[in-house]
Length: 413
Image (cartoon, rainbow, N blue to C red):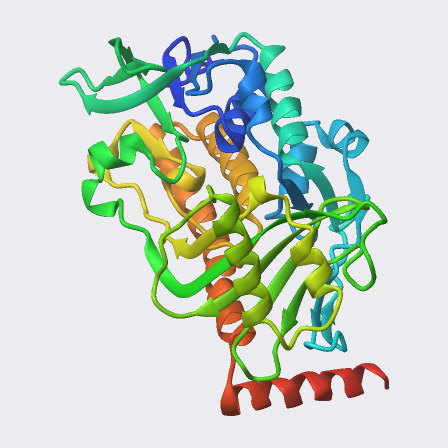
């Protein structure tokens, strides 16, 4: 019998730039799927957060991890063996999406079904808990983790290796390290993309801007926003609001209109915060309660003005040999589609799987691109339709209105 061929990365070095969801999912999946008869690569994750504590304290938001098809986050977590750990820290949810009128009449709803062998179509979990579970999984392996370190540059050497530049938290000290494969998982403002694809740094404005925040209602969330994600629409005035319940008392809201791009903002003086709430109440004056109640309960520290930005996914070519971009470092969804964490989990898992099963990095990256780009295209295109739908006016609004009425009538029969 011929001896087993050594994997191209056996005993080699992999650097992961960014310890977010995509980066940790990749590291965990690669260790899990690696052929134990082969020498495992040395994996080092460089993360800009100063410490584990600050890393986990950064994210107050709650995520919906979906599981209605194989391209969703719960499927990736199951493949990583983390589904039970996630379930223990999450709440099961139907995954239903509702559309309401300004007077809270239900206009339409979507009820996804759970993928086979999953307990629910959706699990709701805080970003903090998801990141904690992922990092705990990585910490049980031989992956090296470097806090307060940012990969700020990369170049390919004549040897074929990738030399990365690493800066400390203050940016005062830099060093270089060489690797055989660099995984760029450093987010929307990727330093590595800026170095290797400087023409691809601009995010595109979708034409809509959101204002909103997170509200805490001590007496509990009222119906109909108590449990499920939903979109409230005006009656042809071009205004909509997205509601995202976090728990029994906490909900995120994002009021949206189309118009010129506004400057993003997350820091407001007391006067500016009052003005933001008044703007929301005036813009959506047609929305009946509990809209006002939700707006008035907004935590000032969570308020935002957020122009909806996006970036199309790109395919890797020969110029990027030895470097793979994953998650938001590659593609960016606007906030009208809340599946970024699901995409990051699948990206990390799929990239690791293709590296383990293919004979060359080039073949692995081609296979990964085929999966990742196709997966991204669906929510990317749907987000455009959601913007068009939520802000519809005139005849377009009437078309949607009568279409939803017809769907409701058909559902009764």
